[in-house]
Image (cartoon, rainbow, N blue to C red):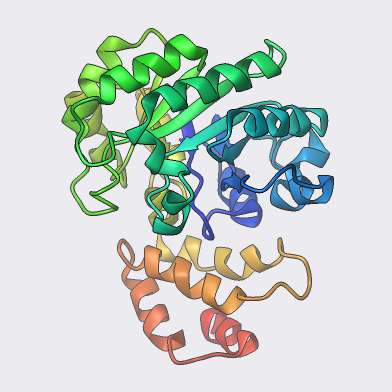
Amino acid sequence: MRILLAPMEGVIDAPMRRLLTAIGGYDACVTEFLRLSDGELPERTYHKHCPELAQGSRTSGGTPVILQLLGSEPELLAVSAARAVSLGATAIDLNFGCPSRFVNRKQGGAALLKAPQRMAQIVAVVRTALPAKIPVSAKMRLGYDTPDRAADIALALEQAGADFITVHARTRDDGYRAPARWEQLRPIREALKIPLIANGDINSVEDWLRCHEISGCEHLMLGRGALMQPDLALQLRAWHQGDAIEAMQWRDIQPLLPRLLEHYTPGTRGLSARLKQWLGMLRHRHTGADEAFLDIRPLRDLDSILAALTA
């Protein structure tokens, strides 16, 4: 059983990766996508995007970090992947799942699901450009507007050289609307020889048990579930080992909010919004978080927000 922490643009960034993986339970985490469209990026961009490059592509707690790239030009992606590896990346993931209209207009992310041959070409060119010891993976959705070709697309990525594939169990047109179509993962898993990572609506141990039963998948990726319940990966790890642990309660989670800010560089903008965003996720599972969110919602000053959270 492998448990991965998902890339969530503007949400699970390096400080959040550091905090969540320090709690434990993850085999690896994936960065937010590094978008490539107008040529090669400077070295500083890679380090800003993935500061873990400077520490062996691991978080401070030792969890491996997979660098994710997004683009539609095979050669540019291959050159950029090789550059990332030269700077310290130890694994590369390719994004074929982002549903953003802005990204899709540029033929990136989930837009490529309409061009599966292009997806396979990208995987093959990137795989050829990197040393064999560097894993290359892909994250995709069930399809652009229908899941009918999902197994064929995933099989083409496997044949192109992908080491594993993560599938968010929704189409691009589904967006993030519930429920995830876990039943559509089973034919994909049965078609592949490489590992399939299940993603989408796994927000509790009970969710994973249902997903596991319905899809047959042995591996999973957590996104929103990790933000709703920061120790969910630990709970899942305990379940896999035939054990159980008491879930973190609001009293355990509340101190993590100001601690998250310690991982940002001084002067980082938008930290008040980040705290509110995370509380917005936590309130789905914790009454205390809901009350705290209502208390700080009208506040704009970061010091006032922190004072309210620690009162």
